[in-house]
Structures are given as structure tokens and as C-alpha cells.
Length: 179
Image (cartoon, rainbow, N blue to C red; front, side, top):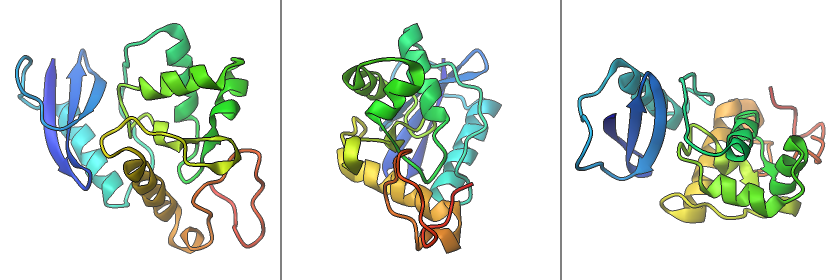
């Protein structure tokens, strides 16, 4: 497995690749086993992450291969369908994939091996509460990522968007619409 550690506004993060796909993104620097030589895919992942943190990108175009159960895979796929600058509640995701348990969605969300790229930070509690975040820095990191994406949608819309909008909330004329 190859990996690349990079600096970000959230501290060091390490991206792991094997077989031509991203397997994981971890908080901090990687030490030990594996090949630290960056592959072309890892360099592309780092470039896309830098663009994301610089506000130049809101979507990632990388081959992903997160390891997990069929249920977790379905949750992570649903997370990737949440548009940048928007959020969904745990219950929204449960309904989308036909699961009756928002708690199970939360557990799968917390087990996401590729945070940021698979946007688990876009899932919030019902009623618009922030919910939890298992990544380094917890809720402060989640708030940072959501605010970063809200600004990245468009400069004009960023000033009018609420920080959190669930799928059940309809935008007002003052809020505009998201792409």
C-alpha cells in the first residue's frame, strides 16, 4: 500500500492507495509499513485536496475503494450523492437507502475510512443540529468543512446560504438554490 502525507488547514492528513484506488484518509502522519513513495494517483488526490481546501473544488474525482460491509458501502455511496454546500440528516440517509435506523447510519458514518472525500461531514442531526464527527478535531472540523463548502458553492450564494440545510428544507428566494 502506498501513501502520501500532506499538510492541510486541519493539520497533516495521509491518503492511502492500493490497486489504483484510494482506500483511506487518516488524520496525521503515517509511519511504518507500506510504501511512502507517492503514486500518480496519490499526487492527484493531494492536488484535489489542496484545491478543495483552497476553495477551488467542491467535488472529488478519484477512484475510491473503501473497505466495509455492503450496508456501509450503501451508506457511503449515499454520502457521495449529497451536493456540496448541503447537508442531510441521519434519518434522510436511512430513508434513502431503505434502512429504518438512523443510529446505524451514524455508526457507518463514523466508520467512513475516507473522510472529506466521502463527505460524512455533510450528515447532521435531525432538526439541523450539528451531530457528531469522528475526525480529528471533532465538531470544530465538521463546522470548518461545512463552512468551506458553503463558500465554495459560489461567492454570491455563500452569503445567503444557511450553514445547514436538510433535504426537507426548501430554499427561500433569499437563499437561492444550489447546483
